[in-house]
Length: 300
Image (cartoon, rainbow, N blue to C red; front, side, top):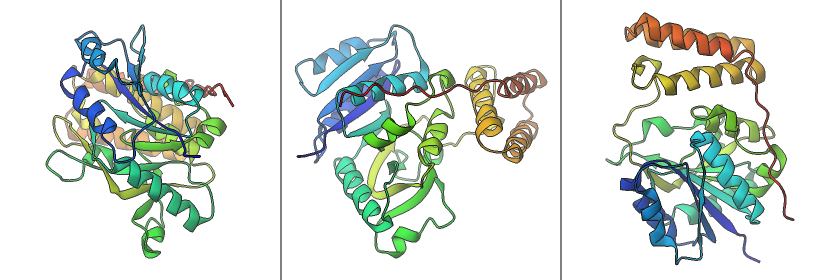
């Protein structure tokens, strides 16, 4: 019996790119069994765009009444896929275009890695390129100390500790054991926390011949030196969330390193004092902020 794969896309007011994302998923050489689109209470013409897919039996639209952020959207979509009996959940943002063999290569590479390692692999992800073909700076996964172990054995994959939610394949067993992303994070570090959490028994893998393209405005990684009044809300979530994770689930030295690095970036970039104080406030909030994962409801 063939495993069932459900793709999950979370969207909010990105009608200009969403159609291309969905079409790339539906055109895979290994077809998805279901495509769940979580509309995070979009206020643009997203509902009209999604109506184009009403006649495709693979597509299910989940419209949330409020914007729950990327964390809430992925939790809702992954839970729906789990309840629908998916064996694999393939998740991505609404500006991620998958090449036509991306899913096929993920499934093949995941199975090969498990065979070589002799253990379950908690997740696998694609190589993420920017629109010009270069590596996407925001989506470089964290690698293990022995990242090339599988390459040395002839596999086209790298051992990783964490990754962003851009073309990530998660087996059902990981969701069953470790639950869903933390809705309370809303945005930022939810993907890092989740992939670190489900890697408790061993690292994941990046499959290098599974490729996705992240259509970002510019090819930049995350840096607190980019903090400004217009994007402060996002950085504040990031400061609180990472502070929480480092303090409660990593170690205190990692928390200190996070704080020092964050302030070094802001000072170097001459971020205003008021914004620096805003970050400090959220870092302190993280010391008490420690949400617990929700478990998906099983249908099996």
